[in-house]
Length: 220
Image (cartoon, rainbow, N blue to C red; front, side):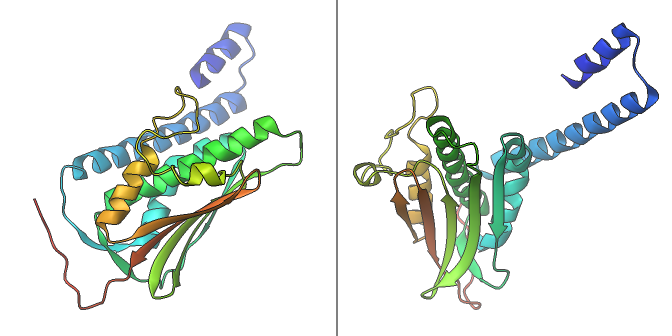
């Protein structure tokens, strides 16, 4: 699209030096973002073939996941707020699988705020997603909170079932939360949900903290 805009300017005979310089800089920026995303996906896909586990800094996993999403979410006027505790400690698992959980939860939050924007008549509504990590009751917690459509009590009883979805068939498979639930169970953790219809949803991942003396295991 950027190149089409440049060609359009050239055909109209109005491309200034400043315009071309600014447009090239913008395109270079997008190329850098695309390269970063592709490299990240390559790494993610390659490591998925391994079942190796290690000590994971859950805050680092959240920070690594956001660059994949931030530009897209900025274009949709969705505010992403990240609040991580660098001293929260470590969990045991596969960091790429845990990142998949984070991405699934944030993706669901995005769908909730986008849907709410469509159904309410409030020009002041600001779509917002908060991601946080903290230590609570001797467990390490990751929360993804949104101010979207919320989840009814009836649906909350089914959201982790395979193929259950409240979205249109074209928009969701109903597997994201089921897969996430399975990954967290593998890590001896759990996912809890709090929600109020048309107000908010909070998804909390709770994982056991690793003792500093605990060793990592690796299975092939």
